[in-house]
Image (cartoon, rainbow, N blue to C red):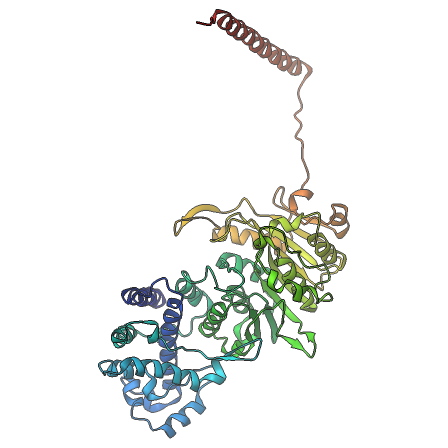
Length: 541
């Protein structure tokens, strides 16, 4: 019950922060998401620091209000406290707490105090929470926020309004919660800010249902893992990586990612913090994976145990296409050509798919979202990739998902499951396109899959069940015979049902058909005669 109450109050906090942005003319601007996410994260870090500090310091642990007692700490006492905190816990000095800012909110220079506090926290925690770019530039965790308000006379009031929302509750009751709680909060937090990353590639938020299905198929029940690496080369805000890490165990894996969008990388960092994966922030990289992959071992690509990805499907990458095409060893199946028209139709996902196959280790497993057209495309790069996957014995299965399952694209999607240790085993192909129920969500038509649908997809795949018209097990040779098609429908048996009847019943049915046809033919002749009579009666006047 406590976590439901906190969820309601947390969403209310986010709504109030949005309302404040709107009040000061910032709603819908490119900077609104920075303000909302930074202030939310500051709130979370303040409460987490207080929670952890009370556990390791008796003075704070026995205090009625820990932040009031903490205000009396010297810098040396603060530094001593920091040494007892766990590696992923944020460090705040006494002047950094929300309580301290609330008390200072009436000062004439409060906007400067507010911004300076956020930047000081970012600097103090740079070694924990900074992420990097492909060019090795460090991106710290907070930004100066009040300059986004162009009216300088309103900045103090803006900062005070933001801070006033933060003292109404604390997160302490739910710090033991993980993915299931914070995935809902994160989804609500970024729901208006993850449509376009502002960079080269458009982003599509991967539904939690799809993320759950992919994670549970990659890591079936009963599989115990430790010390594994998980990677997404087009990570977006990290929904797929979080679901996979939650499935494996946050303390049993390391997350690696790269994404061209700075906004997405910042959202991914927030997601990692909320899901107890702070130790992986150093592996979050902002940059173009296709042109300059960051994660390497020497000059070779680093390889991973697990890869999950929902890469961009079609977009204009003509500006970087030649740089990609020069890396022939990486993109062995080819790079899409630059079309004369509609540059946005360049099938960039085919490059990401090749990169993913190159980035799996010898026993690595992957789940990749692709447009369903990839499964049967007969020309170009797609069939070359499919042939490589099958001939190498890497294909574990394919699931065609319900249509319109993604909020921002009507493209039908499928998930291709790769397992480099699969060998010559049979392959499960599934057509789940008819599952789900159409509903309007935020004014858009979506297909929502029920928990029962999710369980059916996962159970069918992991137990390799065959069901007429839904799933089928096929061999490598069968796929080769079908020109390497990954479409389940092409392997379903066409069944003709027969009914045993007597000669008398057969004669009776034929007689009935003849009588019906004779009646219909007679009616047709009457209509023809009537039409001809009408035509003959027409005269020119």
